[in-house]
Image 1 (cartoon, rainbow, N blue to C red):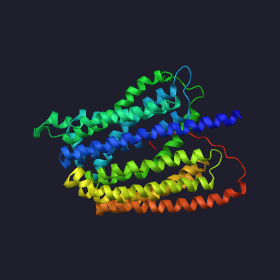
Image 2: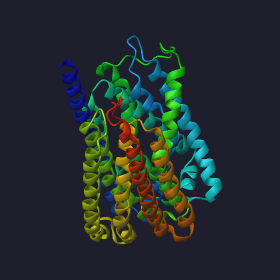
Image 3: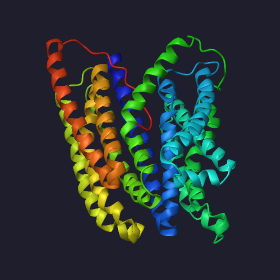
Image 4: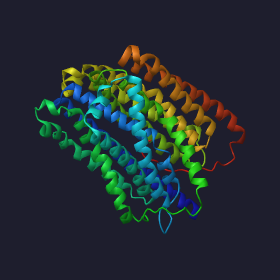
Amino acid sequence: MPGRSKGAKQRAHLVFGSAWVMLGFLAQAVTGVGFWVLAARLYDQVDVGVASGLFTSLQFVNYASALGLQELLSRYRPETRGDPLLGWSTLATVASSIVGTVAYLAIVTAQSGSNSALSALTTAGPTAVAGFAAVAAANSIAALADARLMWARRWSWVFWRLTLAGAVRLPLVLVPSMVLGDDASLHHVGVWLFFVMAAPIAFSGLITLGLLGRAGNPRPSLAVPDGGWSQPLHYAGVNYLSHLAILAPQFILPVIVFINVRPVTYANFFLAWSIAAVAFILPVTIGRVLLVEGSRERAEAGTTRKATLLAVGAMIVATIGAGLLALLLPSIYGASYTEAGRILPWLVAGGIPWSVTSIALARARVLADSISIVVMTAFAAVSVLGLAMALVPSRELDGAVAAWCLGNAVASAVAVVLVSVRTRTAEVSADAPVEVDVGVGVGQ
């Protein structure tokens, strides 16, 4: 009975925490869409394209320079006399963000020539480039602080950080026009627009880091962890590689589009992608909460089917809704954003097969099936990104849509076959209990 009571409490924490975090990221996504709606109505399409291109670049730098540190802090509890893992992780993420910014600017500029968004950033001066790196570092620190808040079960703090910071940036959309006015010599509107979009969320993380003591977390330190560095470094490295593979399509596809199209074209893609990303939260949440909540000791076939039906059903409804929204998009954003309305339903529809892969991955994580995880993530990354690199340079937005939809269809087919094969293989030992280490991550 005590064990059962403890398990019930763990399940309650899982559902409660997942709900808070999901609502926080949903609020962040919705306020983000609201920001871009206002920007599209207030500013020239080129400026919106520059700002959205820089925001995509920021997201990619954060993705590529994460180093598995958020997963590390989610896995290892703070020590009682200090928190060396948090201290060293903070230093490491600042360094990796700076290196990542420099490397990204150098590589993308070399690959795409005079990219207008990156040119706008560099011509705005060294302060603008340093500001980009600072926002990237603050974003990464925010993720580390959230991981420690979740250890302290301060789920609501994560929600309110994301919600309030997201809401603050809505009135800030007016700042570029107020500061720059009509002076053409100060025409860095897109760069300013990027900073007022990205900075509030990023620097709310610095505030959260300073408030961790009030949440019961020890102060960051630069001591050696009690257990040494071997296990933490190994864990961070393994999860960093997994992080890169799992999220590659969502983060690299926009970059491929960004470096191959004009800012005006990219503005249409980014606005549609931002709306579609709100729908993508649904399968991730269902896979995380329902599947694990339904079976902590073994991922039963019935639970997997139920989770898959819910995820696919949610994405079908979202696709229908996107089709209706697409009709209104030009009137919401402006007549110059008709292309965003045209591709939006297809981007959301690509989430239908992706939701199948998402649930299959959740099942594989519950079963600690590393082979399935590696195969599924590899196929998802290679199929989507391979098609994108082949199609986007010549077909632009149509190529991106085709890569997203067809690549996810291939990945989901592989996931279904793999789950079927692995399930049949496991049936011979169906009665053997499977130990599961379940945690709740942020921003997956």
